[in-house]
Length: 89
Image 1 (cartoon, helix red, strand yellow):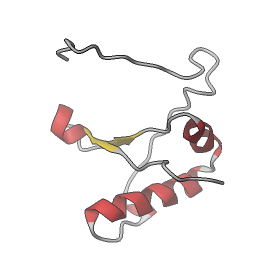
Image 2 (image 1 turned 90 degrees about the vertical axis):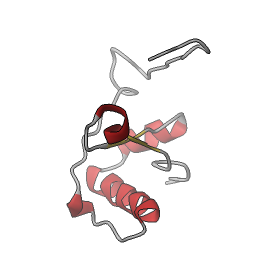
Image 3 (image 1 turned 120 degrees about the vertical axis):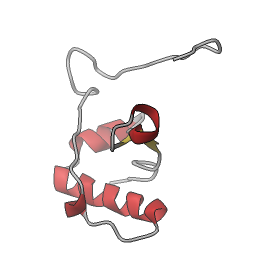
Image 4 (image 1 turned 60 degrees about the horizontal axis):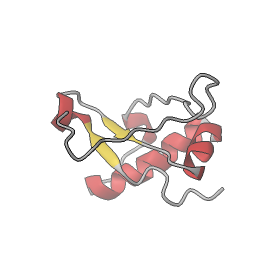
């Protein structure tokens, strides 16, 4: 399984909305990998990625993970968004 690029960018929701959470995305082929990866394996990968910027070893047991599967959802089959140059929110 090629996990290069999966879980390498995080959005700090505390800074944006006051919620003590991080959000990451699986884009393109990584979306398929993330959706098909067993939860324990994905959580272990994300703990490794978070450890890199937290500058300490983060255990998968230290956080909860909520995963959506938009790519495989028949009502979405992937989601696309576009913010124009003039977007304010």
